[in-house]
Image 1 (cartoon, chains in turn purple, red):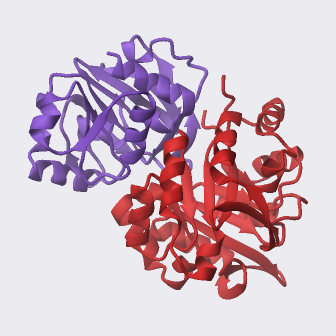
Image 2: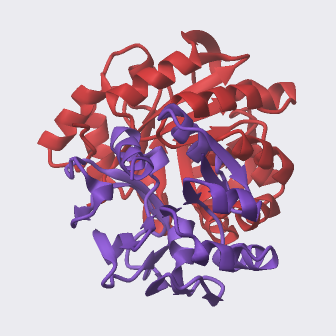
Image 3: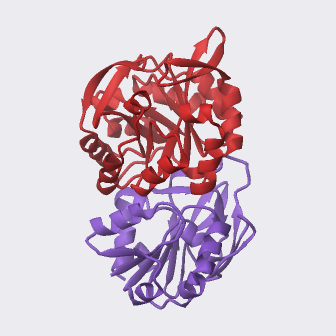
Length: 192
Length: 253
């Protein structure tokens, strides 16, 4: 069973649809017991960082997420909340990845919205993924590159678009909305 | 590099795709789910579904259709038409849409834009502007293009950016359905005025029209309907052509 963490952060239906289309069962839940018992955990999210962190803290989901041992995947806001700090709402985040999240300088259109490519490093999550494909982004804040960055993207400036540390994985783009290549990445995660 | 987006639009009325010229004389253009799937396979970058009957008949957008679409397609899509409140948005987003678009309701109540942005994030708020050249001024029209408002398009574009819109879908009523090309002047003006993505809409008839709009304006996406519905310009052929003309687009491998 795949647990998708339920919190007040936008549309998780599409994540569940994608997992279902890939042949896996999932449950959208904020029940700590169900999350702990899941084979894999997905931490999705679109929304505002401080509101989302407050919601997680009120339900003590912040400590729970940090303590997870199974493969756990943060998507979009999920990635940003797994970082140390976000400029959005001056928010202290989970600190799984020791890097800050900053707002894009307004040198170009913000949000970064649309299809963009990424570069890969070695990670099982990129197994057999053709890097000439683009993935779908929509975000106004970015995570700075650090030692746990496994892929970067360039928009206004280079930023970390995928991270991995131990059992924690994260993607800034939306694999569930990135057509065939996105499904491939999700499948790689589900097969870890 | 960020790619320019090619966005087929499906105008929906009573569960079917329809297309009219200058917003009237609607004719049937097929099943929305089938069309949507075809477009995804062909490499469309996003889809827009506009329930054009919703405002007129004063009913909510078809949540069930949105659920079905969300199950069938794996690229982002926007749903618009008849969205008047945060609660309408909530239903559409929870059904699986990535973004919603508002038009008449935002003109009537601009605060709706900031309310939606606060609740669901700026990225989810597309404000659609239907614009028409009146004399030498581009004005905003509402109610499916039937009602002129006092708003000037450029003033409104700036205001909705300030209110928290994530994107502007700019349709020129003068050009819509004519296949004579996008309205380059107003698209250029709006896209240079705001710092959020602008999607050009209305008038696409040839592949060259897409080159024009991407070369001469800062639009990051171009939307069209009939040329895709009737297979006049297949998306893969359009994208191949754009790439040959050094416009950066997503090519699916």
